Amino acid sequence: MAFEKVKRSDNYSEWYNNLVKNADLAEHADVKGCMVIKPYGYAIWEKMQAQLDKMFKQTGHVNAYFPLLIPKSFFEKEEKNAEGFAKECAVVTHYRLKVDENRKIIVDPEAKLEEELIIRPTSEAIIWNTYKGWIQSYRDLPLLINQWANVMRWEMRTRLFLRTSEFLWQEGHTAHASSEEAIIETKQMLEVYADFAENFMGVPVIKGVKTENERFAGAVETYCIEGLMQDGKALQMGTSHFLGQNFAKAFDVKFQSKEGKLEYVWATSWGVSTRLIGALIMAHSDDEGLVLPPNLAPIQVVIVPIYRSDEDFDKISMAVNDIKKKLEFLGVSVKYDNRDTHKPGYKFAEWELKGVPLRIGIGPRDLENGTVELARRDTKEKSVVSIEGIDQHVKQLLEEIQNSIYKKAFTFRDSSIHEVNSWEEFKDVLENKGGFISAHWDGTGETEEKIKELTKATIRCIPLDSKLEDGTCVFSGKPSKQRVLFAKAY
Image: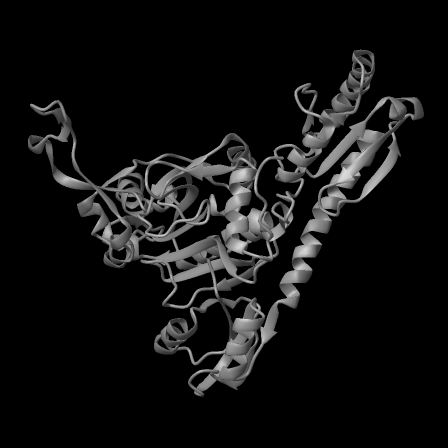
């Protein structure tokens, strides 16, 4: 195919950018910092969205939609939240344009808004102002709402899917009668995210808690899932926040308890975004293109006919249509690439680039023998199998591919967690090995910031399964009670 390939090992960043472009996933928009998600990239997002939406509804959540624009006064009510996002906010100040005497379009100076509007960087402010009218009694709780939306965070340095000024995401916002119930919700949604990442994306994750410095602005506690990409850098793939009563107090959201007392509501919020597509690309793909796990591949099986005559093509098409119907009956998404504008070799390369998990090749000789050739995208293995029972064979093989992709990523992740006990060892591992560094930390924000300043490594999380153990901080030498995970990150 006519495009320049970049090896992953030569330049990881350029390899990633080229792959996003060449696989037809997305491109930079003419609006600075924004992207156009192309149909194939959006199809992956639709698969993610459909599965997550199903999981959210299975846990009792319902979808709603809230305004894109947030009055500045709402945004200011929760100070930590406003301060945390202030530098990334885009602001609407006028509501009309006009044509001047030179026929140029200008902002109408007479159409200045009485109150400036913030384009949502996140929706806690507008949602909690709304919840004030929805919640009066314990009978109105819990309130379990999710929103699929776009948000705007004015980023200076952008990268397709991983960090753009506008991106798509979901944000859950729930209200509860007790802190215990809200914490259970926060942890439950973290488990939903971890389940999705591992069993659908094929990406093993570490579940943990963020430090105070890395916590979501306005949260009491932030839980996260952290994945490791093939270049040894970490990626925060999802967060779930216990918000305490901070937003309820800011927006005066109270409820009458069973005992008749007026109390502030307890809150959570949680979200994942199109950044997950970036994670999917970086966790599995190779020099030939995307490697997509079957559970999220828009096309799970592509069938390519190999023929010389119209008569051969007609016979092959009859057999393919039968195979296609059987596979689709089992819930497998199939594309029959019967284009006569491209040769089989071109099609093989194209679908390999796009990461289709399984390719079926079929020609006249295959028809005579009652067989087809199967080619796996993940391992490049090929096999000849009987057309008889092909549907069940393919179904099982797709499950095997899904498991194989996860196991490969898991092995890489586990071999990339390095335990260190000194500052020199810390720096050596960071520069020469990468991955997660398990190290003691004295628990202070000052030490955390100093390490970040000197090495660009951050504390990704305090793992939930981290055991208490006495030690000394690798940087300050002060006492420490447990190890945390450091890494360079996206």
